[in-house]
Amino acid sequence: MGERTEPSGAQEPTRKGRGPGALPGERNPFWKGGRTIASNGYVLVKRPEHHLADVRGYVYEHRLVMEEKLGRPLEPGEIPHHINGSKTDNRPENLELMGSHAEHRLHHRKRDKGLRLPGEPNPEVECACGCGARFSKYDGQGRPRRFVTGHTPSSSRTVSK
Ligand SMILES: [Zn+2]
Ligand SMILES: [Zn+2]
Image (cartoon, rainbow, N blue to C red; front, side, top):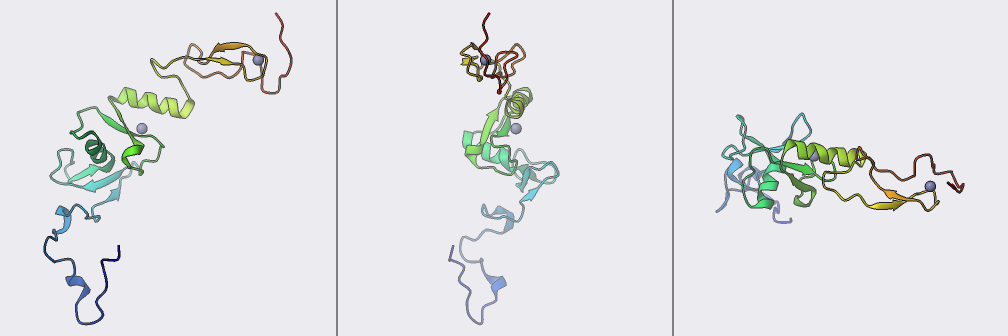
């Protein structure tokens, strides 16, 4: 910021940026011209020489960022998942590596419905109605529960058996 001071006078603005070290167009790592949003909502950047590039030379930005974060190329089937759900938020801390499409789908189930993941602990929780009953949080289908069956948020009755 602040480096692009406009010369007052003779010099043509279009001649700027051609000093020593300036890279032409797409070879410049700070080149933003090739950044676009794909129809599926993900960000594409133009990197024709990249191993993930499609026939038009575009690569998904979240895949580039994940490779940088990992320090190695992505393997087939590996998918970076957007933790906060925003497909254009490609900060490294918003990306989590999924080993497969199936694992990725599970994470979306988890985020969208709060379902239990395979191997996720099933903690004992207390009924949210205040009756004091304790039960495992997830049911047989992996759905989270807050109440003993039949207890509701408005229910303040004491259940005795
Ligand atoms: Zn995802
Ligand atoms: Zn209860």
